[in-house]
Image (cartoon, rainbow over all chains, first blue to last red; front, top):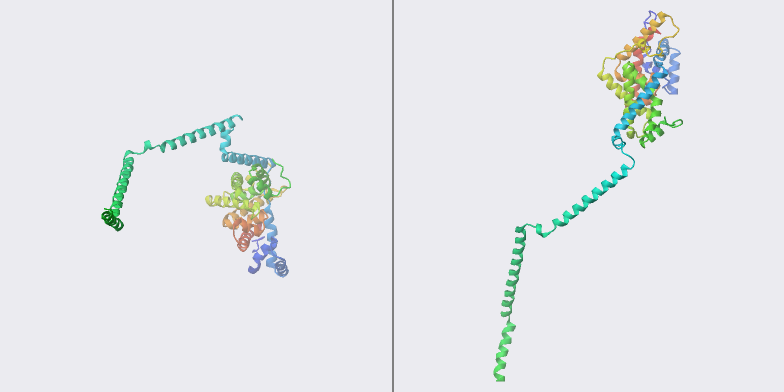
Length: 184
Length: 191
């Protein structure tokens, strides 16, 4: 109801275009089409007139005093600083240290690291000492050497056998026997 | 505050991304009023609007390295803010409609819909119009209300609203049309 009269309705096919027309969001072709229609349609013209009355007051933002904005800005910046500080907590932790303490702390840390590495190396070298090898493992290795020597002896016997079975050896013996009476 | 005059938003963001966090302060200065008014459109309470909009700045600052420059800073920031406001609206489905009379409790605050020199009956009409506007906005689906406030109150283009709301321009046009038609229906007798 407007002044006791029913509200004029815009043409359904135009209503969305009228809203865009009000906000200046339609292109030149659409704008011309809407303007032509408005010149002949009372309902759509009334709709647009209402928009020009209703919407601008709603866009007006409450005007708050400058002190409000000053406080707002100060509070926000303080919250940002607090958040930033929380992100870099270690800076706060180091902050009470005197300036000479930081390099001293660094040097001490490097020293401790070097000693740790050195000790670690010594341990590695002592680990390789055969004294630490378990006895059963050592016994196993001695046994292995023993068996290897047995193998070697066995192979020597085989060589002797081969030598004794060779035909060349037989012929040479025969020749020795033949030459013996001649010489005799 | 750092010297920021003549620096574009994206340049300020670049400084922040390189660890110079003090360059975020000019961004707060530039957008605090708009951010507050958007939040106020959702909450209708000064304190809640202040908290929400400040929270949006804190979130933007915490995520500043994620800003990749594909959109403008304000589009990116408004998206953070609008998401916070929509979350707030979901958790507080009944908007506590702060009347424009109570806004005037903030010293120096002026009223909408009212001529400061108007007579008492005109002030009453303005108060009623404001209340109706509030009810109409409250009755709207959140997305319609968002589209309307970003266009009507903040002056964002439909293309930018689509980016903020992560939707299509066509959808924003529909939201805007429905919101405006509803408001006209509610308010026309008062203007």
